[in-house]
Amino acid sequence: MRGQPAPTETAPIRSKNEPGFFQAEALLGYGKGAVPSASGSVASGVPKTLVILFDTSLSMQWEKLERSYQALESLLRTLRPPDHFNLLLFNNQVQSFQPAPVPAEPASVQRALDFVRSSKLRGGTDLQRALQTGLQQCSASGGDSSYLILLSDGGATRGPIQNGKLASWYEESWKQVPATQRPRTYIFAVGDDANLPLLQVLARQDGLLEHVLSTEPAEFKLNSFLSKIGRSPIGQLNLAVAPESAVDTVYPLQDSTFSGSIASWVGRYQAAKENVTFSIQGMRDGAGLEMSAKSTLPREALDHAQLPRLWARARVDALLEKIQREGEDQATIDEIIRLARQYKFVTPYTSFLAVPRALLRPRVIRPGDPVLRVRTDESISSVTALFPFGLVQKLRYLSGEDVWQTRFLAPDDMQDGTYTVRLVLRDRQGHTYRESKTFVIASKPPVVQVKLDTKRYHRGQTISLKAKASQSTRTLMARLEGVSPVALNWDARAGINSGQLVIPEQTVPGTYKLTVTAEDIAHNIGTQEVQIEVLP
Image 1: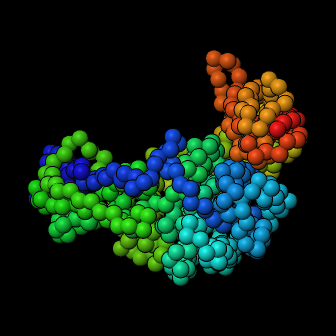
Image 2: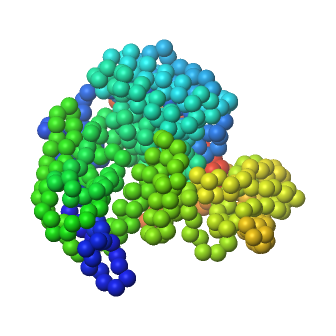
């Protein structure tokens, strides 16, 4: 347990009327009989049933679609034949790969991936219909280890679109599923504009949320997400303090906690030097989990100056969620603004950039890339972009992200290179500012050269992959039918990218296509295919 008083101007010791803050942490070990593997996951031989919702609405174009497909392929390749899965593509309609979950055999997995590749992005997003169909399939499957997995940006445009109503509906619908068949709600959110307030609430139905931005490598977060499938977060986990009057607000710092990790809470108290008992309760593998510890609320703790701000951030997140559920009220907004100003962080109701300057994202684009995003000072009331190819475009303010955005088309005949976009910014007093920002047009896909020691391999043998790629390459992935994609990493000593791919023992002998795909920072894709022969 960590303690920290609120800061004062004259001294770090609390006055009688000043609140103090604490952080409580607990290491939650693995349950009885659970064995952590080398990757950190817990080995489990229980067959799983996965119902996967894959967003194919128009908002998923470009990098969001690429990241969602990467997650889907990696997920399906990790399944074993005893596991079952079904794939639902959704936009304003829902398309089902199969009427019901099927065994995760290599042939079924490949057909599911082909099903996605043959589909088209279209229409809006009816998220409620997709979730409802997924719950129905999980309920009908009859298994007690089922997962409803959502790959989406969470932006609903059809059916109920208000976060509060949609979240309340899902919570009630999820509870109506028989307890032994309720799926764990696992969400892999993609994109800078992902609807995180909604997705965080959905994931609280015995699940978790992982979010990857459009410009960051997805491998680390994707591997973390996949490692938790087959495991269950500790349910109904909460921290109780006795006597209750000792503290007034306590908030968890994680949305979900798994065995083998640390659970943390932050809280505020008024009475220092009071003896209290901290108790943690939860449910793991159907059994109750409980632990307790006694401590004294500190009068001063100078080593943890971040605690007041940490608590204030958790408090504001709780207030913002309340607004999502119940709508705005002036008292809640006033408290959010007061805490944000006192502890200096940004909320949808505040901004703290010091000068009216603009930050341009993305800086590297492809001809045809549709989005220009600009972050400015809060005093700016309008932004206009003057592009070097003659286009003049007004930007629209997105309050949820505190950015200005516009969609545009860079002409296909623009040569690769650095270009300047001029920004005209106007503040609320009518003052005009002009800034120039540069961006890079990158249209040429990276070049890949694959090197193999041989092109004939036996089942169970490891393929040692080596590949050279253009300097602009950000990620290199090797794919072989029936095998999970493998990342190739830079080996500075050998001066080449390398990786290893194991051919499964059950692979049918024959000729296969090994594909190595390179992606650069502008999301251009370059590939090389090599034919290999698999022997018995």
